[in-house]
Structures are given as structure tokens and as C-alpha cells.
Length: 467
Image (tube, rainbow, N blue to C red):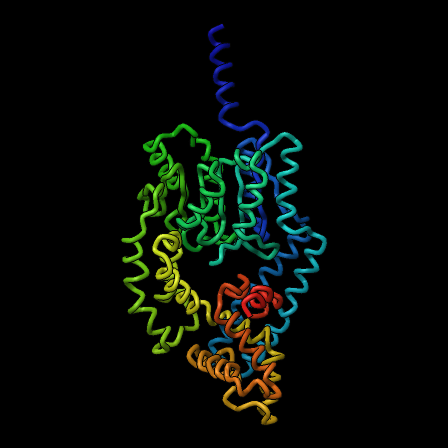
């Protein structure tokens, strides 16, 4: 009889440890086949089911994966074309032909995804289905790139953090029971993101992701980290005190193989840890000292020479001092609300430097018809020669000088009667509201996918609002 009581007690505790009828929601923005398989196996080990949205058929997924590899090739072609001095004329011609072959990528992606509902609708339907079946989501995995404007996107779909938060808020009967959040993208567990999700999903005791660049779907560390955390998350308890939380969050990050090769960062019950293995209580953000040490201390010496044109922005900013400051800034974006305009001003100017080349290439490609019209009119002597557009590969100071000349022409009242005023004025509006305003940039324009990835990636509505 005593043994039966002990067995019943243990069985009851096991039921309490795992929510009844719990599923895990996987939001599949970037066709991360490896992550899906890892999450599916880990969910099964937890006795749960993985719900994938959108749940794309295998054939479509494989077609998308092939295109994703082509995009990687496109990156390599871009890098080689940027360094023309090392290419022979034949090599350059061959690369350009290969580049042109990949220019139909957006249309092919659209064909593959034809008939798939918008991501917001699919997520909403997933919550409705759980409620209908008297089930809950214990965890959510948000898989995709994460951008400076807090958008999550991939080859399949895009959703802003705010849009996703609204869906969670509209389904609080389900979302209030979500205990963990896996944000599988770059800069997803920088502290500003932790504060955002704690505000919009307060039930999530555990948040996992990356405070800097995250590993791609093809990297072993990506899958190892997801598997380890999902399966070992069971050590967490809603009754953990601060000392327990510190011990357990350290145990979790230490369990990941080769974790120091990543930028992993975890949050649990007010405690934050990254690959330094130093646990920090971030219940209340404290930013002044950090800002002084990161952004401000290096800003004048490193950033200003580029802003003023004393130095030209390097072809690749990946390993540059600008990128290092940018990464530190990402970790401290939660300070913007506290430190105010000064932090935001410095941070935005840094972003404009780092992403200027990609954005300008996309701009010159997207508006080539109007640019060609300006060139034709200059040749016909109907537009002043000093408004001749530069090449997208020109230096940032040269491009900025051209933008100023266009702006000066458009602002001069005596030019309003010029026969080509509308053309120049339209270009000026686009330059001011798009090329010089990252808030109007779609994420595709500031990533390294090449200028032709998505020709419709310009947020025209944003630009129109600011005209």
C-alpha cells in the first residue's frame, strides 16, 4: 500500500511538471529545415507536438532551400565584383552573367509561396486551433533574421515584433500559459529584446537566443543549442528563488557544446547570462555606465571620421571598428529610452554608415529608370550637368555631395518652372526620405543579399507619408 502511494505521488508530480495537452509553436520565417527537425525531435522528447506555421510541403521547402543556396552564391558574386581590380575582364563578364541568371529569384520565390496565407493569419489560426482543442502552447520558437527595426523575416515571411505581440495580446487565454520563448535570430536576446518580450509576454520565464549575430541553420551550434535547451528546460520551476535561477541559468548555458563559439544569451527569472558565464540581474536596467563605455567612448574617434568623409566606409564592414561599436550598440538599445535622443542620434548615424553601401546599391537599382531619365536629359542639355548621378559604387562622400546638389536644385523656388522639375523633385524626395532614412528601409535592403534580392522591398508607403 505504501509503495502504491509513493508511485501515485511520483506520477502526480510528473503530471504537474508538464502542462497537459501542450504543444510548441514554431514560426518558420526562413525555411530553417535543420532547426525544424531539431525542434520536432526535442518536442517529442518532451512529450509535446511541434506546430509549424507556415507548414510548407517538403517539395516547396526543398525548392526554397535551393534558392537560398543561390542567394549565398549571389553574395559571393557581389563580393568578387566589389573587388574588380583583382578580376580580369573575362572573369568580370562571367560573374555578371551569373549574376543576371539569379535576378529572377524574387519571381521564383513568389511562385513557390503562391497560395500560402499571410503569416499573421496563420499564427492567429494556430492559436484558435489550440483553444478549440482545449490545448495550450508551452513554448514558442521564432525562427528567422532579426533586424534593426525589430522585424523578423526570412525567405518565407516577415512579421514585426509589435505585430506578433498584438497576436499574443489578443489570445491571452493561450499566451498567458507560454513559459518559454526561443528567439532564433541575430540580436534577439540583446537586453532591449528581453525587456520588450517581458512586457508583452510576461508569462515567459525563460527566453533564449543570441545577443549578437546568431549561427545559420547549417551550423551545428545552432541545432545543439536548440536541442539542449529545449530538452533541459524541464529543470526550471515557477517557484525558483533568485539563487535557484542563477544556478539553473548557468547550468543551461554550460550544457551547450562549444557555446563560446556563439553569442548565446539566456534570460530566466530576472537573471541574464551570456558566454562570459557572468550572471547579471537585469530586473531594473542600468545604462549610464555602459553607454559611456561603449558607444560614447569610441564614437568620436572611430565614427566621426567616416561621417565627415575623412575616411571612406570600407567595402565590407563585417570586421571593422564600426561593426564592433554596432554590436555593442545592439546590446544597449534598451538604453535609448533612458538616455534619450543623444544615444538614438549616435546609434542611427552608425547604422547609416554600416548599411549605406547595401542601401545605396539597392536604391540605384530600384530607381534606375528615373536615374536614366536624368542622365538622358543631361545629355540633351535640359538638366544641369552637376546633377549627373554617381555610380552606386562611388564613395559615400561623392554620393552625399550629389544628394546635396539635387536637394539644392529642388529647394530653389526659381526652378519650379523648370521643364524637368517634377523628375528632379521626385528624386530628391526619394533620396531624402528613403536613402537617407533607414526607417523607410525594408530589412531586405540592409542585409547582404545583393541589390536584386527583392525589387519590391522598398517601403513606398513609408516614404509617401514623409513627403
